Structures are given as structure tokens and as C-alpha cells.
Length: 369
Image (cartoon, rainbow, N blue to C red; front, side, top):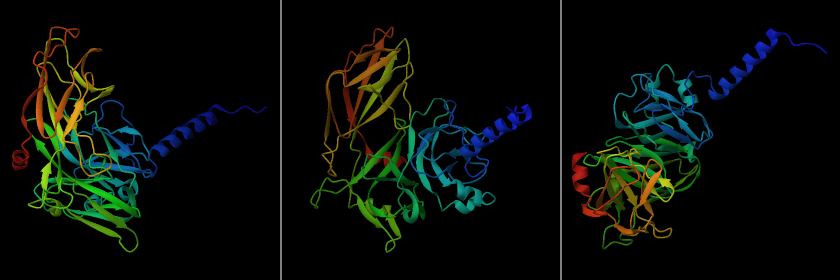
């Protein structure tokens, strides 16, 4: 039997390594496609079959974040030097790896040709636990074009007003084109605004006003994309102004952590509840606000005005120990608070319970953005 030389073994091993690197970077673009399980900037999930490249705000060599493999599962993106300098929201601008390779020396040519645009948040001092989903509906020969001539950011969601986003356009952005395949789609516009008093990004749904057919329904648009209808123009101004009523469809719970032992977190059943900016742990002497969405009325375009939560449906956790919150019915558009005290993680208490403190002020939030 012939022996394989050591040098040949080395070549075979090197070939395997190069092969794996090639799979990780399908087009050999030189973009970092590594899945960062720690020290990541943000996490994404690519639900398409296409390798993608992500930028912060707009495509350029100085804003390049990293690559996202096709059908990636949860994928941590790197934190390149100089790209992220402080906590802020930003447009996650995504192109295909093929687009990147073909325009590597002139990335600004891709400014009006994103594959996807999403609203994301970078947290400089804590982890963003959110996962930003890239819709499986993206990619194809047809386009949804967003013209957002309103003073507010708009996000398009597909099939469900609280579902994952299809695309995003900053206030004043026009000609934002999203490539899609043929099909019939139901799209819900959602305006996004920062409530600086709570450190939260609020979702605001335009609804049909009283006195009109379908009063109370969340506004939506049904579109068809095919050879006869290759582009669907979405004008955000049609969902903003005197012909609509703005509602968040949510309640907001501020948790004040005045226990002296550790950070705490909120859980709903067995699931961790995150803020809209992906924060999970409330530090000692800190507070955070959580959005609690009202349940949908069947498959209609309306939502209930209340969210009944049974005893133990919400709980506060610290160091592996927890205390169940009492049964409570939250109302849409209302703001609540609860103060947690205690000397140890075994002694978490909330002497005042859940207290209503007012209503969400959409007009004030809009005027401050």
C-alpha cells in the first residue's frame, strides 16, 4: 500500500481550509463572513438564499460591517474599527455579495439599489440581544419603491402589522427600491419614532378614523408584482395626515430596579422580554421600558384594546431566582411602572404593584423627532 507524503497531507489540509473559507465567502469578495458569537455589533438572520453584505447607513468602504451567509440562522456581525462610535439607531443597508463585487470600486453607485434596508440599533455599552430578520420575500426581478416624503421614519411589514419588516426608509428618503419576486403581498406601513424620555423606538400604526368604512382598522396596502406590474410605488404620505389616526397598539411598562443585589430582567412565560433597542438586563438603580403589544383580533386588521396577563404571566428574574407579578390587565396606549426592591436576589419585592402613570403622547414623540 502506498504512503501519502507529509507534504501532500499538508496540501490536502490547506485545500480543506481554503475550501471552507470559500464557502464562507462565496464570491471571494474579501468581506468578513465570520459568525461572531460574542463581541458582535448586531445580529441578523438571512432568510434568503443569497449571500449578502451589510453597511452602516450607506454603502462605502468606511461603513462596511460584514457579510451574511445565505439562510444563515442567527449571525453575529463584526464591529469594525471606526464604523460604530456610540449608541444610536441607524439604517442597516444591505446589498448582495454580487452587487458588492461588481461595484467594489464605486460603492456609492449602490446608494439607490439596496437589496434590503432595516432599522437597527447599536448599543455601545451593552449587548443588543435583538435579531434583525432579512425577509425571505426579498430578491427578484420586480420592485417595491418607497418614497417617504414625511417627517418620520417608515417601515414596511409584510402580512402582519407586528411582523418582521420588509424594508425601511428614513424621513425624507425617496426612491428606496426593494427587489422582490412575483406575487400578491399585503403590506402594513409602520412609522417609527424615538421616545427619548424612555429610550425606546415606538411603533406607530396609521388607522382608519371613525366615520369611515373599516374604522379602527390598521391601514394596509395589497400589491401585485408580475410582468404587467413590475414596480409598486409606496408613498408614505398616503398614510400620514388628516385622513388617519395614529395608535401604537401597545402598552408600556417601565421597571425601576431599586434592589441592592443585582441586575434584573423581565420574562413573559419562559421568554426573555427585550426593549425595542435589544436591551435585556436592568442594572441596579436603573430603569427600562418594555413594549407590550395588544393581541390581534383573529386575522382581522384590528387589535384588542386590552391585554389581560394572568398571575405569573410576567415575572422578574435575578440570579436564577424570580418573583411572579400579579394578574393585571394592560390597556392600549397606557404607560405603567413597577418598582422592584430587595436586599438580595432571594428578596425581590414590589410594594406598590403595577401603577398606571399616564398615556403615551404620540404628538409629543412626533414633534421631538
